[in-house]
Figure 1 (cartoon, rainbow, N blue to C red):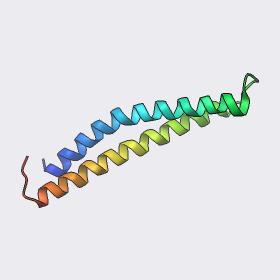
Figure 2: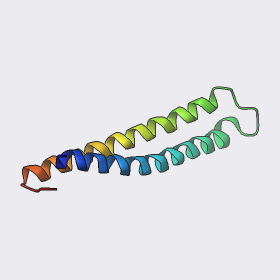
Figure 3: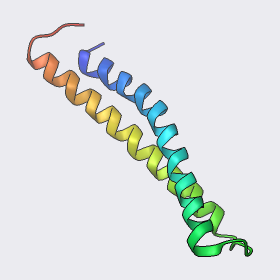
Figure 4: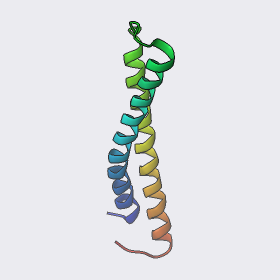
Length: 85
C-alpha cells in the first residue's frame, strides 16, 4: 500500500468523525434558525425536515471529501520527499 493511499484512508477516517460532528452541528444550527426566525411554534412545512437532513448530508460529504483529499495530498508530498511507510 502506498503512503498516499494510507494517508488518504487515514484522512477518510478523520473525515467520518469530523464530518458526523459537523453535520450534526449544521443541522442543529439550521433547525435553531428555522425555529427562531422562520417558523416559530407554528406548524412547520413538510419540506423543512428533508431540507435540514439534506444540509447535514452535504456538510458530511464535504468534510469527508476534504479530509480524504488532504490526506492524499499529504501522502503524495511525503512520498516525493522520500518518506516510507
